[in-house]
Length: 283
Figure 1 (cartoon, rainbow, N blue to C red):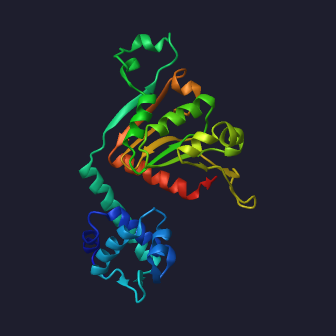
Figure 2: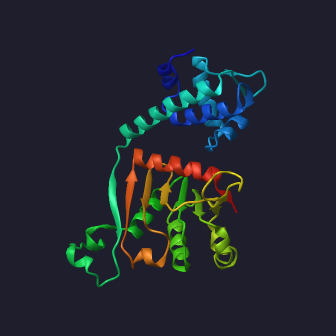
Figure 3: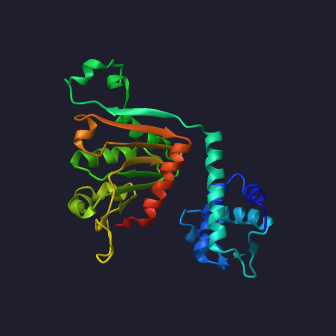
């Protein structure tokens, strides 16, 4: 059995991707598996070329071996040991991100509709009501930073919110994947299917629904699993986490606050969003 240190060194500089591949092996169980099966089981969107590089590194330690058939790999370790190594590699990935890109945090705010009592208590600079980064600017900054994927999670959205959502996605790179996660999309069937269908299709936006029913026979106190979090995340490098829904009130009526985070904190947000996307229903 190779040492943990040897395994971490063998997959540098991709310990996070290696962790996902070992998760895939753990799900599949001991045996010989094709690259496509391994990548699919990892559930992380790793392409086969990148996976081959990582598997070649792991093979040097004896964690896996090339199979007899083309593009197949043998792994004989059980799920318990593989999941233990997943934790180690995920920790190594987090440490690497923190060193390469130390966390930076900035407060994003939507100030109440003017005139307000609050504005009198805060200094204002040009373009920054109350002296803070605006929520609208924070969303745009995240969208501008996305090169591979931009995800917007909002449990509530109204007519102005759909227009806001369009501006956010239009600010992202043309080639990046665009995903919006909503809560109970059935209530937005007219908006999604008719009113906004054309631009959602032209911008290639994937709509997901995180509003999942549990078996009535389970002991779960609430039969529906859903979300109240508001998140906008670019790749795994920059994210907004806060109170602002995509509503008229969130862009200039009510006080809203959120944090714009990068580095290791953004990577943690992206990890959570990855899990949400794996369970959310695709429309």
